[in-house]
Every structure is written in structure tokens, then in C-alpha cells.
Image (cartoon, rainbow, N blue to C red):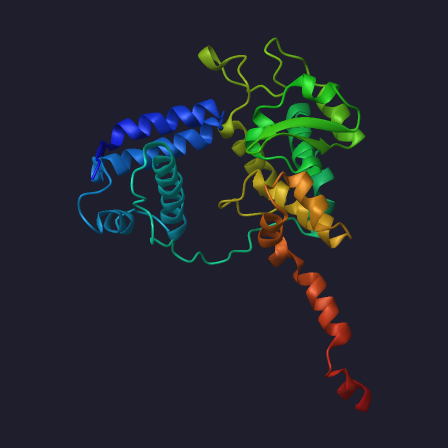
Length: 290
């Protein structure tokens, strides 16, 4: 049987990821997961049976964290098979079942509070919140947004995300608020308020986190793990409940398939299900009898 040093295969895999222009966030996660793999399994395929399963059991954190390691290991194993003909060491390893969570979104009351809550925000922070809510773009896509991405079209913007670039509709008010901001030499639309070496640098994750936390505190939310993704979920949920269809939601969200959209947002459509239930339930006959 042919054996290869795990680190050599990892280096080749990461080079392939860079060649395919995967996001830095994705590559960083791959590096972290595969560093653990190289420690527990210096050679491929593993010499001991069950070593991968035991390593995954020892991954700290929730089942979601373990699931992320398994996804990375699977992609890496498939690359190893295709590139080097190594036996698939992930064959037969199944990920844990993930409990379905309904993460927080804005209610109609929350929406009504936003104009008041944003009245004391700076022009930059107000534009960021409005843009997130209007376009449902991801945090990373917001950070990478440049002024030219808003100037190419009047009713849509170009964003670069997980699946490459895509067109996203934008409302006139959101576009005008963004273009009214000062322009920067590097072209990025949003800059931070840092000093020293962080002066005149694009806005980062921490800056967006602080803006979201400030807004959530003002409307009475406990911040917890709510972040920029809350605006994305709220937009898609509102779209679907207001008569939009899954294909429209998929294109705005930039999901790779409509099934991803359906799986992610089906739990948020309970209001429609409740209305349909009350309208069609067979026990309505008892109300008529009463």
C-alpha cells in the first residue's frame, strides 16, 4: 500500500484551494482543521483503524464544531483520492445529527423600531444596517464591498461571496446612503475608525459586531450570538412571508441550490403553516356545531 506524508498532501490541498480562489475565511478554517489531522495522522492512509473516528470524538465543542471538522476531512479525503489515488479514509464515517435551531429574526415590532433606533447612528453605521437589511448580503461580502460595485448598476450591486460574484437587488435609499459616504483611496466602501496602523483600513468583523450590538441593545435585544446574519435571515423570512418564492430567496441569498434555501428557511414559515392549519383543519366542524 502506498503511504504519503499527511502534511505534503495538505500543502497540495491548500494550494488547490488558493488556485480556486476560495475565501480566506474558508482556507483559514481548512488550515485549522487539517493541522489537527496532521498531528493525529502523520501518514495517509492511516495505519491504525479507527484513528479518525477517535480523533473526531475528541474534538472539543458542540456537535456543530465536530460536523465542521468532518466536512473538511471529507473534502480533503476526496482530494487525496482524486489527486494521489489514496484510499478514502473518510469512507463510512457519518457526521452527527445536528439539532435544528430557529435563530432570531426581526419581528414586525422590531422593524417598526429601526428608524427610531438608527436616528442617533452615524451616517456610516446607518448605511451599514440599512444595506444589510435591504440586500441580505453576508458579513464578509459587506466587508469586501467597493464603491465601484455600486456604480455599475442603479438597481443592483455586485458582491463576491462563497459561490463567486452575484448580482443582488438594492433599493434606491440604501444605494444613496452608501454613495453619500466619503470615498477612500483603496476603493472599499466602509472603513473603520481605527488609529495607528489600523487607520484608513477597511472595516473588519469587530467593527460590524460593535455596530450590530449597539443596535440590538437599543431595541431591547440581548445580544447573545446575534450578529450581521440576523439581518440576512430577517430579509429572507420577510420575503417568503410576503409572497416571495424560494427561487427568488435563493438568488438573493446566493445559496448554491434551492434545497439549501428550503432547508434553512422552512422553519421560519410557521406563520403560514399556522394560517393554513386554522383555515383547513377538519375540527372546524365542531365550531359550527357549537
